[in-house]
Image 1 (spheres, rainbow, N blue to C red):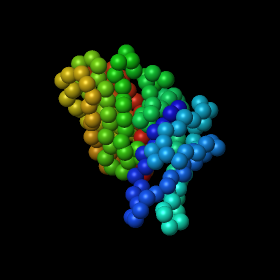
Image 2: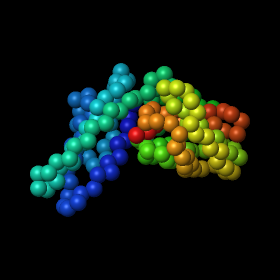
Image 3: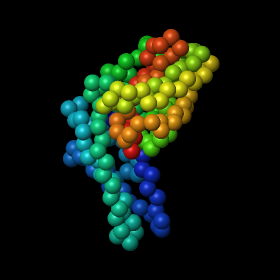
Length: 180
């Protein structure tokens, strides 16, 4: 599973150097790295150390769960890839991004539609309870890329299953997102 990490740290003065540790023995010094985890990894601690010019370090560590059971792969935008184990109606459409991930209350889901459909429906479920916490119907009158913003005020911090379906109820794509 390949994941792109988004670094939102900003220097207050000068430049920063970055060290990412992916919890599997691999590191990167890129600002916004992409890392491929082996298929047998399910949960890892990912750490980012931002080092300032004056030897001031700031460290953040997050637990990253690579979902198994709901779908099997993550594409490079952090969304589950229907072509690597998720459900998909015909392979033409997919979730292309989940941003931000993790999120607080608002999430943006990028989708690619190659067959025209008048609308899509986004459902967001708590993984632990299966409870539907948000749904949104979005007009998509033509093919192309769309970004759908969904407010997820309901629900606690944790793992969420994002599902996108076309107007006929066929799965376009699915993804896992984390709420903090």
